Length: 195
Image 1 (cartoon, rainbow, N blue to C red):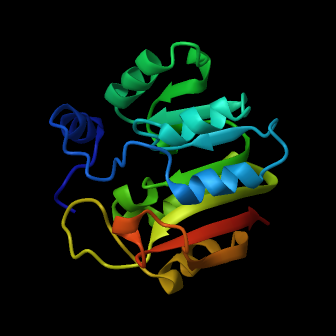
Image 2 (cartoon, rainbow, N blue to C red):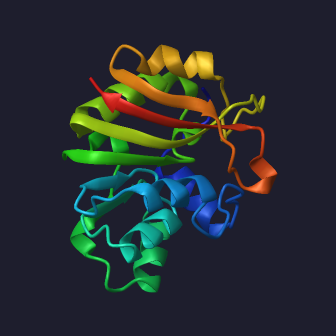
């Protein structure tokens, strides 16, 4: 891949407001998933959190052990400016693959599709490492190809199963019925449990 998707790249995208993935609010699939969770004490990570609308919603809903991570400082600073009461110790400005910690739940919202395809197996391995036993990864992946040389990068359920099936029990990986209108028919909701 000729494109270097490093901190400089993502910071440039934020500064130029080239953030087409940003819908300005928590997305329906993540909101409805969070609304079904009874245990608010779960240790939660949102990698590639960006402007972290999902985090703002989850935190307001009572998930206080919530961590957000992004390679670019710009969206994290934006988030802290909007939510100054959010614990700064739970905001991680770093590369996902360098992050250390243990989580009960990792939420996936546009991060996986921002990574170069050749890092997808590494993503699955890192998610497995970060989750406690029986911890889960839940969220949304694209179920279509974009034909892009830059993010987002699409894929298919069959491809995704190849990355996750050895390390996780796949509870759900099916078309998303509650996508936001522009993404209707092009997303899958996943819920997978660490083996």
